[in-house]
Length: 310
Image (tube, rainbow, N blue to C red; front, top):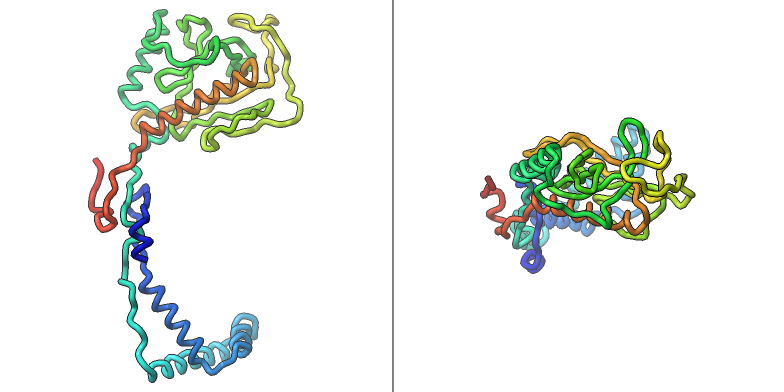
């Protein structure tokens, strides 16, 4: 036990975890069972018959068998006590289960939101700049020519938009200069999911971020050429223009930088472009997780719970 403890480490999220175990009680229980096995006068078939009567017999038979079992166990312990003393218990009443404990620290409610105060202020400044018709303070990250088809929330029509990731958000604009911001979805540490739809992907994405709802069955879509700002038909098209659809959704969270529930359904021009976008979104969500969580320095199990992080 000591050798196993010396080469073990433990990780815990909460201080109410007790990083100790008790082999002392387990050893005592094992010794009691061994005494009954060695000093009982009953054969195995007799023991099984009594147990069967207790569990399946009539109430009167079960009570009788139960009393006989208690009497026989007591007699076995008395016979063992008349012999030589048992070996002392080699285990302490409690001992550490690992030599080093690491506390995984999370910002209060931080796993539901990417942005801390400074990042939120930066994002608000970018949105204010976009609304004022000026360039954003940072270009952000994008894929290819930054173009994606976006399904409108109200009409359900697919229209061409320019997308990028900045300030902990996935943002869309109607123009390549990003002066007309139309949508912004927060990319949070634990409240954001990316859902793949349409044609399957050959990529392997983090299961805690990406949900695969694709199907091998043919996916209905209506091919169309890219038209800046709108779809070719005047009234808009309500069928995806390609089979490479993905949804980005964020659940509502409070936290230090709370977010409202938001979602956006997008469509890429090819399987490769969709995979690149999903990789970019996963990388941003992983960055959010690194901002929200940290691992404290190793501490002795005896000191566990005696320190608090403010």
